[in-house]
Image (cartoon, rainbow over all chains, first blue to last red; front, side):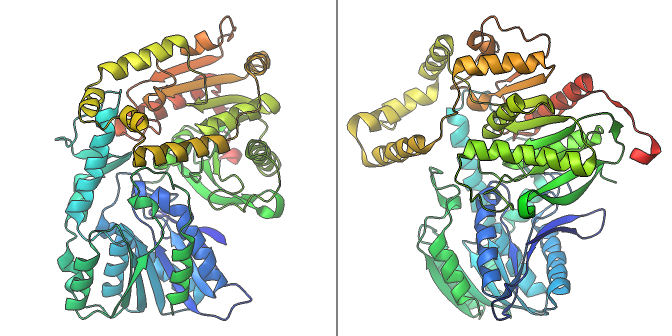
Length: 261
Length: 295
């Protein structure tokens, strides 16, 4: 695994490139798009585990951090869903340069799945898109984060600021959600997935996700080639008690690597 | 705008198995310690809610080089394969990071910084390694005091959430008392987790003696307690009740931030914490402006 910075010097992005295992037959390239905010942290270990398995199976893999997240440059307040898509496009170019592969698979988790979807529609060369518990409705997603924060506030012995507030930046579960970030996320609706995509979509849905059926109908309405997989493991971003933080959803990762062509 | 630091990937240790990011100031100070930031729990080197990135960059902007890295078994470092305790492995990895900076960056002195488990590992390394001249310990493990317990249960008793949960039969006391499934299952998992946790292999008397020894060595200590641990640490001077009569020799900075969460995730708390650590570094390790060649 090679850790690297890429992009221009004013907007440096961090990446981790996993070359294909020398013992495996070459299978192509895979770009992994992480979630945002609180979900990013529960996902880091999972994406590293997935990258290692894909690399063992013969893929060139790039994990990366959006600008203003992880080890990339920028402040936590920087960025919107649109700029994260631009960062993903830059990462895709970097992976093409490193691997020599012009066509690839994109794997996106939660908001990262929306990034992957937009990437696949906007750019040539994405053959396969794996969407893992995608955020299908941005307003619901923000509301759920806010409700979780309010639950924390309700029990807190500290003086919590009023939430929601009139402030331009809303602190949510340790992350600043700016007005522009929020409006870009809330613009995500099921309608978006009714648009056609050349990439085949593999939808990995946790059983507890309420969006699964509606999302599948949206893809089918747009004529997208779709395969739905039910995720048997309890995924950390959907847990209420946080007891499985750090646990690797082994069966899901194995299945994902099996299914990616 | 140009960032105040250049950041680069570093690999070090046996088989280059440890991975980190070194923030190198664009306007460095001379004769100052390097800062080494230690993982909080299992969160990778970015730190909870990106706290460690912010600390590294804030200190680099003030002229201090800062390394955030992953202990073996975490983040992008190799797996931990040696059959030793997690605590011993962590202290060993931190010393490996100091060796690396000493060898490759001519560093002689170090300030360790960590949150939660990272603070505990930082303290233990400070006890053992004389190259450490300062430690920033955010929410380290401490014992509750009788006064602290009374304060905590008093506040909980007066808290509206407690009463609404009690009246709605949703309070955990009900769950425990009645053995309801979810509460019982959660309690069992929590119990199993606590049994797996590795207690720090030191007694209170040893900790006191060790702190006394590092203070005699001239080590500067900054301790921060946030509202995130207010069930354990809940009044400013609790530290002095825990270590009565210990002479801190003017080498202790104690910050009590009851309205900030454990990871200083909120904007105001984060800014206050970064400012406080920065000003403490400037006071304790002012250094000198670097000559051309050192920049």
